[in-house]
Length: 483
Image (cartoon, rainbow, N blue to C red; front, side, top):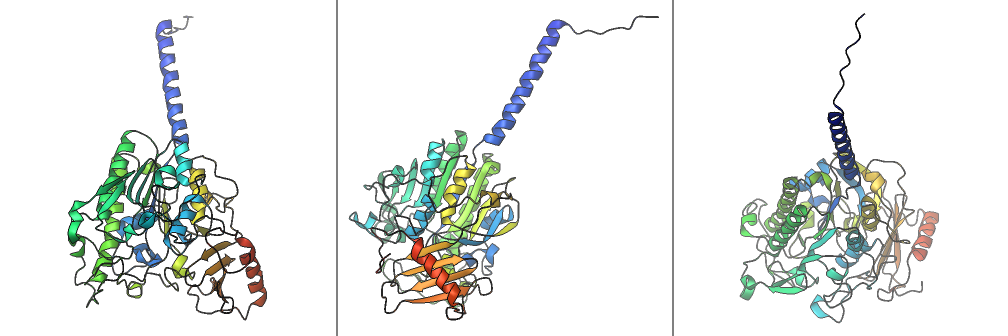
């Protein structure tokens, strides 16, 4: 019987081959572990005064927003999402801090000693989304409108967690699209192209260009980034470059000219201008998506699109023509749904299910804990927000709000509480003799047509108690009653 032939590898070859296999395995393991632990880029696109119905994915029929719609097509559309307030500054404060207007420091559009750039500032120790992500190694940038503290104040953008700032610091200057200057970090950059009434430099385009540079720079540095794109479009002054206007001129019938008033320029074609502005923003979103693809960052980027409050009535805008409120009652400065029911789209390719929709009730103050959760960072204790990451990722265990609360300090003072599909609104808060309540069943009456305050006294009493106990007194935003 012949002895079997044994093929034996050379010992040195075997050792080299083993080391190669081990190193390949370790490299693969490191790659997989890195993919699991790599922090996602985060982009919040915050439109200014864009109504729920101003997006074609939410029913807009008179123009299309395909790039913004693609966020919903490749992600999730929230059907019951709410802004932080019904005007700018308090809404943005809730987004940045995780506190509702029951507890946030900024609860109204309030000026300070710093003049036109002097919107009410937040305390120096305020924890913002940007501070949390900056501490996690993110490059952080805000592009657009800040509106929460002058540059000299304790809560200028670069003091609130941002590495880069380009745009408008104050709300007042942000009413104008061809301004005399914009801020670049701490520098006020003149725009001589706009001197003497000239219209040479459209602010939204300049802001977009700086944002694109930030994406390029941080992508090349292979550093996670957080972008807060607080665009001013389509806020109030209805104006767009001629190239955008040409797409819509004459397409909406006879125009009613706006002759100009206050901060807003005259506009002979306000309808064409509004469509031009929103579709320009859509084009900008398309540029962002293309850049993320170009730099290989799209798969690892959370993109959120929303609006700071409901549609406005200023500058010649006709929200009824556009159905800007999407069938909801009211507009900006109302606590009816049209003032606070916001569009909210979220995309994270491979993580958020494409073309999905969620009925989960959420609000601006949920963004801080959600994004901290996504970045594996701790959120502050005691905030009002709740992470909605389980809903975004289609996981169980989503925590629900017991209720949502808003307060507004213009037009006599207003409050609202939403619980279990029922909303109680308190009007003329500061004039007790005229104070009145309205109660709506949003499940059956999304347009808030039927006031049930007299038909549901027990439920109204329950919600009134919540309204009384929900808020903490504010040293700045005060109501004319004891709390």
